[in-house]
Length: 193
Image (tube, rainbow, N blue to C red):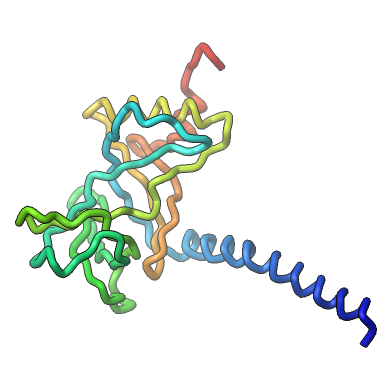
C-alpha cells in the first residue's frame, strides 16, 4: 500500500476519534437530560467574598452531610453512591450512602466524599458533581447578583434543578421561587448594562 494512502487512512482515523470523543460526551449528557429523573437540590449561601469566576455561578448546597456508623470506614476523596429520596417539600434528600453501586430500581447519585468527621460526630460530607452553573457571558454578572440576593433573603427558595440517570447528573437550571435565574437576570435592572 502506498505511503500516501496509509497516511490518509491514519489521518482519517485520528480525525474520527477526535470527533467521536466530544460527540459521545455531549450525547451522554443529552441522554441524562432527556431520560433522567429531575431532582431539586436546595442551594445554600457560600462565602460572599468568593469571586465570580468566568462564566459560571459557584453553587453550594444545604443537604450534603449524611450520618454514618463508623468514621473509619470512609476516606475523603473516595467515590460513593448517594441514595436519593424526596422530602415533604419536593426537594432531594440523601437517604444513605454506599460504596457499592445500587440496584437499577433505586435513584442514586455518583459522587465523592469531601470530608469525614473525626470527632465522633459520625458525619460524612459529600461533594456534588454539579456545583457550577454555566451561563452566557453577557448574563453571568446579572445572574450571579440575582442569585446572591436571593440567598440573603430567607423568604426566597433557591434551588438547582438536576437530571439524574444511572448515577450521572446534569445541572439543568438554577431557580429562585420557581423562576430560572436566566430569566430573572434578563428582567434585572442594572445601571452598568
